[in-house]
Length: 364
Image (cartoon, rainbow, N blue to C red; front, side):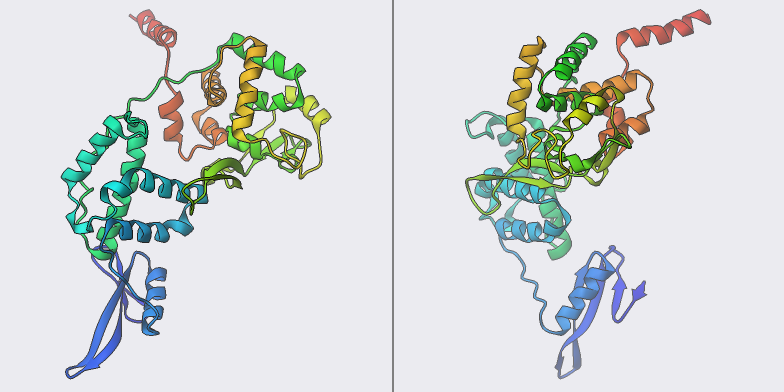
């Protein structure tokens, strides 16, 4: 397929742009630039013709990683960008950073994965399979980028992810839900956030970032469009900062109906639009601080402590139990696909299985 001036799509899926880089005894000398989209290829070609496009081939894994990171900077959230930097510096740099890219083998990466599982933490203990998966996903992406852009062999291509046993999801019982509801309805205004998490499924970061301008009491809707989190400084070895950014994914930006029984309480709490919901001021409540408050709240309510995220699990599980369709539950939770909701929450307990089989027995 040919588009534009000297730009065509190759059989390997990449776009190639050719330009005259010099003239020799035998005539024009052509040079090519490559990209994975027509627009990127056209941009590279325009720069190359002006002598402004240079493609320095990375020698070490360090160089390759930072080229990959730079290429991804505008396509990922700042928190994700910082996470990549932190994972690389913490787990990968010492092992592979100074090595030549061509020297890395699949055997080395497999050995690296095993070492992370056995003693990857700072205290010498092993990393969890889920954490190792995250490091390996990043490493695979880095080497795949090297293969695409610089034609290196990809040593991570055949490396398998470590098996990760899915933990059984914890939820609050109906009795515990009732205790939380009674306590939150009569407690301080800041504790209403706990009730909101239990009956809407919002994440703690989304709750801490919520301002009154995001709450439409007339239409009874909460607009979730931000999240608050503490992140490490991208260019410093130490230190963190709090950032209010877009939510976890595009699907996390969503509208959630406000439970009717909370409306009157929210009306009495209403503040100016730029005030944060949890504090009623222009100062936010940090996630860690609010988790401490949540822990004390459960103690006072006589409820055994479970992680704050269990409020979200309980909301989702109750929705499924009451017969709310999975598509609706997925949208309320802000999942990127229904598959995530199905895998995580749609499962039947023994009593449900028994009832279903009884229907079969009746027909025999």
